[in-house]
Amino acid sequence: MSETVFPWFQPIVEVASGRVAGFEALARRRGPTGEVESAADIFSDPARSAAERLDVDRSVRYQALQKFSTLAGPQFLSLNLSPEWIDNLQARDDQPTLSMIRQLGLDPARLILEITEHNGKIEQIQRQASRYRAAGIGIAYDDFGTGFQQLDRLLAFTPNLIKLDLRMFHHGACSAHKEAILQMVGQMGAQLGSKIVCEGVETAEDFYLALQCNASYVQGFVFAPALPEFVDANSTKARVRQLLNQRLDMTVEHTARAQWNEKRLHSSLLALRDLLLTGDGSAALDNYHPSPDIQRLYICNREGDQTSPNYSFHQGQWQTDSSVIGNNWSWRPYFYQLIGSTDYQRRILRSAPYLDISTGQRCVTLSLALDNRRVLLVDVSAPQRLGSSDSCHSELMPRLNGAA
Image (cartoon, rainbow, N blue to C red):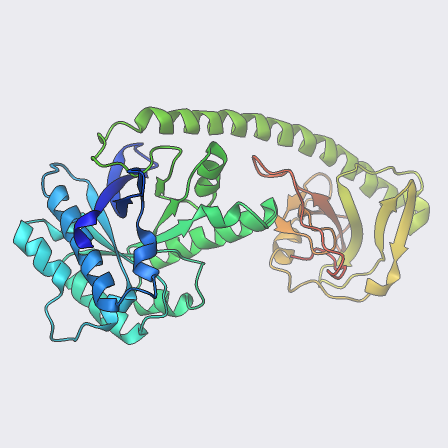
């Protein structure tokens, strides 16, 4: 069996340089008609004994390391390592992968071991990962987000790399939810000191998604599939530059539209403030037709207590909701920033974007001081991220001011 399974190598591309930084070794075999196909199913086939699967796994690993030993340069090789094999190692045992590396004279610093999530014993994984690290080998956490036990493993062995398969975002999630999750993963990686690798990057849109989570590396068909030979390190530079230039052009255009819309909205809010200062509640709003971007507006004192109803504009009329009067919003993460202005004439402050619970839309909250006691807060639809066009509205979500 082991002689019929062999490694092919998929490039892992560094975003900043556009160069091939490394390769992931993937198991391949010949199908019934001679075509090369994935052999990944062998390693999870319950009809095969653990000994047989381990034999195939180690054979492919050795072949990959042997092939890699002929590659000069700084590129790294990433190998998959199942916790099933780690569980079978004893603390005193020599680790077979280390023995292979020493036998072939490889620099351990050029190797990455990808540990996948298959409910392995966390203490054993932590112990063996520490031993690999002590030998100079990097550790990657593969398939982040697809298993049941995730955070405990990140805490047990903070990986050098966190691998996120973008194919899980191709179905079932709206753009705002994708954006929130990707930003969370990117922020978590930065806080842990782990670089993000996005695999399954099949289209330009996938590449832009990877940029949203601050991915250092990308891997997928948009650059190259797994191949029998190592590609040249510079073979992906032109494609990365093309994608980054397209992204920059879209960002410039997107920013120009957003700035134009913000200036228009700024003038509209100043006019609204003047009306509120000269009138009272709904009567003052009768003469104001808001931008379609405005979802609701309300007034708070500087302690965060809401002193007015929610005002929203539907079908040409203002609607009021007085049930929220007296609610306190000082605990919102953006509130203290929005009341910081002492410029009662012109200055408008804005919160960071968030997902509004009542509408499912991406929005921001703007604030404008009415006087030294009151602040006008306006929830406004924010421009969609590049490539995004959908919202995440749910009829089951409660209506809340500035819900994030």
